[in-house]
Image 1 (cartoon, rainbow, N blue to C red):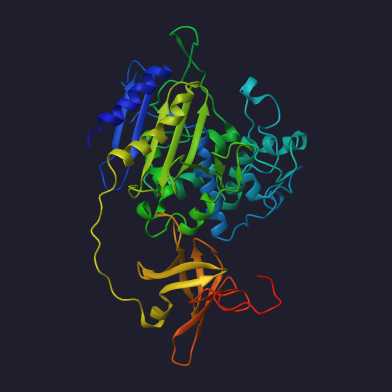
Image 2 (image 1 turned 135 degrees about the vertical axis):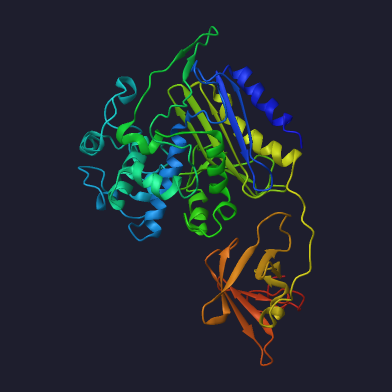
Length: 465
């Protein structure tokens, strides 16, 4: 499709929200990378282009979260570990890694002191020492409460476990392996100027430069829209960008995307996983956008990848960066670009091709089964056994099974309904599967009561009818 539709979305947002500079990118594996920028960088010696760097604020947290999960997968920590098991903290050491990642620890939002007033950010030693004066604002696990302090602690935890600084570990374990060469901790030469735009005139005043010290793991990074669109695509669909799972196990990304809490009690439009925002798309079944927004003095950023839904291509991610700290309209633009690419340029429809038959061992499993009074359909798709409720709407992901090692008639549910539970096959003397037990519930070829009688059988006299 013509990219003019995307350009118009960006131009409209830049003009309506009065943003000095906006840069946007759209990543998908089946199309060339799309980038666009409008406005001025604020640097008279450098024009705004796709290589201009912007601050990305709290999008930084997604990088820190992946570093933490890498530590977990390498056996260096457990998500239920208290942070005090890894850091010499004078207080709040009982807060767990998982609660810090999901913003449910109840710890104060910021380090001790009026850091956003003084703009004097602590180094690591002061950050830890000042925990003795930091308030616990909510009981752990009570509800969502956003905390830059929590992610600062996680960044220091990663640094100590890996034996380097957070910045060194980030470069070694994420930025270089994934080719994010334009993402840096320090302010680069090709940096946009961040502004506060006057609400009552067209004047824009530059915000002061800031370095976030030990709070860097929560908000420090600079990047380009193209780097962040690639990163967002990875978070949503790691198989397409890292098929060998060199960066992180794909199942771990699934774990990070699973919502642990919601951001609002009465409006469940946004959830938080392990360091990731999970945003279901209104009116689009089985579709979510995964990523994060960011804000820093003079800058706003948004980077999200798209999962599920009809027409979504592999590796679909969008990022939008702006040089105004108050233009909240910009935060919707990455979502609008993702929706536009699917609506107006959906993924090409691949021709269906016949495949090999199901293995003989599982052929008698295929077809319709009944459990708990409901009908299910078991099928062999993509070289694996799957199941879905007969009344499931189109697009709902099925349950997927894999055999347990050494027990071909016992399978583990690896995704979908009853994930983690076992499916056991019972065979007759001829080897035909005649009964299933899924999560211990009995499944039969015909509908049966829980005591194994067909509902069409006569009801015994003296019982309820």
